[in-house]
Image (cartoon, rainbow, N blue to C red):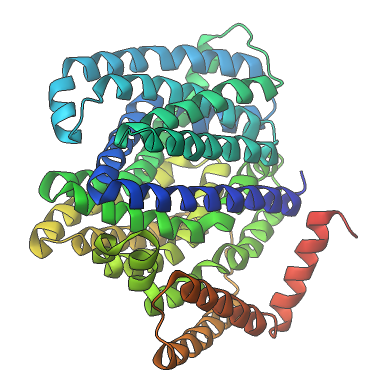
Length: 474
């Protein structure tokens, strides 16, 4: 598998997908307002939380075992059987507690939540099967199709008069697209399941589930707690800021998704040097977009939220800065975490996750109540994820030699500071008050950062080498 080519392919699809999502959220936020967006985000938060017991780490286990190349059909069949019981129990629980769920969401959506958890698990299983087959690049089109279905269908339903329900119906439609298309593209056929295959999956998933808990809790715990103590408008503003920051992680996620099955394969072949090389070489590409985004957000956070989504979303301007800074940590963590799982040590990733999730839960409650504001949730997330990253680095260093390229990272920071200073200077001369002005400022910042970053020879050489590898030019 060509790592550079797969990463770039996935990244480009993610860029298009994120662009579509950004336009969609902008349209939905302007049409529906923060409160209705909050209803939808709370629906997604519950869906994310329920995915933890519904999957129990099996998706990661399936990807790991299939990537190892032995009996993929039997592993897949065993995974399907293992999923049936928890899914049935969760659906039953949703129906039994639908009154409480509807009250929490602010709309009659419990039945749709039950349907969503089933569709989501079936669709995501198809995606990890493709990843396990080392066909990571092919999953890009699935993500793009899901995003188009959500935004396109949601826009039509919003125009027809529906509110938060429009986004939920189109979300279900996107899951159906991945479900059908993903399984059609898969080349693995179901084979007779066995207790040994099920036991092997469980041995991996029992630790991987804790890492999954960390991912889902990291994404949705703060939203769920904000929904308990603050308003749906606060949920809408906070999650909108969060969605903006996820754009900065596009390339980082593409790299991490690509290296996991490859690291897993190298680990079975005891290719330690190659694993260390790919981890060290992945750090700067993973951080190269996140660092300037943080410094740019410091200058334009209020303008980004207020001008793009509406003035009621500007209450999350400080949140946007904090969460964008936290993404710098995440860009490192996502590489370390996938590498730790790839060398078959999900147990260590699990320990790091348990500690950070517990801290995140405590801090969310304490800081949200202390601040009585969504800034408390952002601080809780940033602090707990910093600890999570440090623990992952510590555990991985016990098996591999990690040498972060400090010079290149330092140059990324320097280039970002220079960009921010120039943007701040422009801001003092010409106040950014319209969307076209904000767009031009962002373009100017990107060009400035690109100019400075390419002045540093090691980064320039790496960029052009990876571009050549991506397009297949020697």
